[in-house]
Length: 137
Image (cartoon, rainbow, N blue to C red; front, side):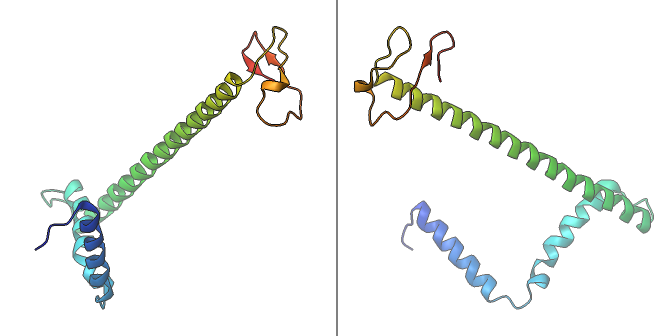
């Protein structure tokens, strides 16, 4: 068998997966064993010795399953919030970097006035640098 690099192995695995699913007549029946094992996990969690009645075990397993999915939803929300905060921080850093790069290309006088000859491109608006805050206005 020829040796494949990582990208080729991934493509072969995807190809095999799609061919397999294309040849599956009953998807529900094919995934039933995995689904049954997943649900049995919650029954094992709430009643490992099988001491409860089947009705009580089912009720508790349902609650355990709901708690599991609520926990996943919480982790997902926290992850999205963290990702949004990271994107916002990156956007702010990118903007600050852009402003620093722009400011390094121009000459700013002591009064905050900009020498228009050193500004790249046409100057269409007046810009004043507030030296006390270090901000461009």
